[in-house]
Length: 378
Image (cartoon, rainbow, N blue to C red; front, side, top):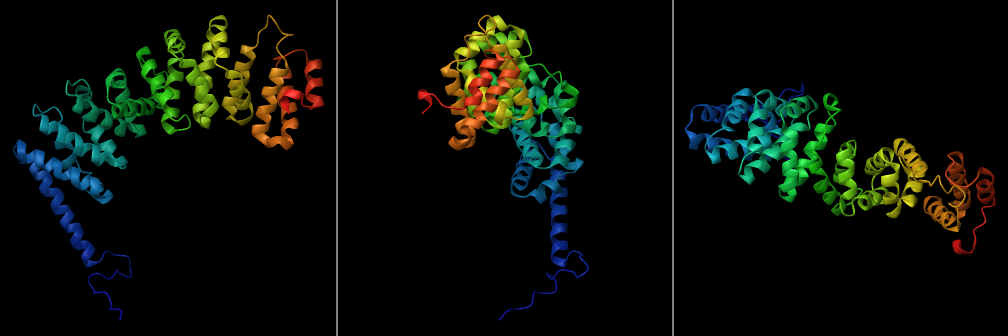
């Protein structure tokens, strides 16, 4: 037989908190006040333990993270970051990191409390554990748009690149995401990245799933670097660097393909003679043709421009061949299936004609209009 709930736990019909909820709130407030007191007045050991308790509570509950979003807790934790005691620094870092996760108010309060200069110093630490915890903290704080200008202007970028170069796998992943967050700041649209970032970025992109969110971020950063001459040279000189970008165009998400084709376009725009053959050698044409159909509007425009740049102006009458028709027809089959492949192939070829990519207009339109596969296509 069902029992009626006790009056103390019954919800108030007017929406007011029950006595039980009020009791829990009082206990939470008392807990926050006690931990704040220990952070302010305790010795080093007491402050370290208080920070550990806050970390534990913040990890367990979103409500706890909100409860600790007060200056009496955040400010003392921030003041522990430059402590000469390694345990104090680490416990404070972990507490702040857990307070900031999925809590925008705490992210902003931590930065406003002056945490960024201390985090920059920790990024320079000889202690690898502290460096990587600081990287994770910068990553978390940089997710808040209001924090990005402060972090960018603090000198964080070159230090994050050093983590990208020499950190652990997790440290490198955190550094990439933090750098990507900072690159999306409106106040830092002209953000430059050291050329030293190319090798680790291409290595990570090469080893990652090209359609992943991580690949999107790595490709976006490579596009930023490709805007400089040194960056373009470093990308082209990296073993399988251009191949990695071509594979990203073929296998990536909408965003990662957009960024990857942007990198190749930047290369080809800067020096057609130097980069054209390198890009063609890695088999970029099929992926670029497919991108003109399946990519974002920006990716489609970029792919078409790059295809224009890749054509050989010195031999305009020798480019179109059975091989190119085979590529276009195969791509059309992948896009629309075998039934509509002929129609799609015709449209792709006509689009290429308009941009003076292959042969003369009359000859190409004749091939596209026939839509009759030759022997190699069956």
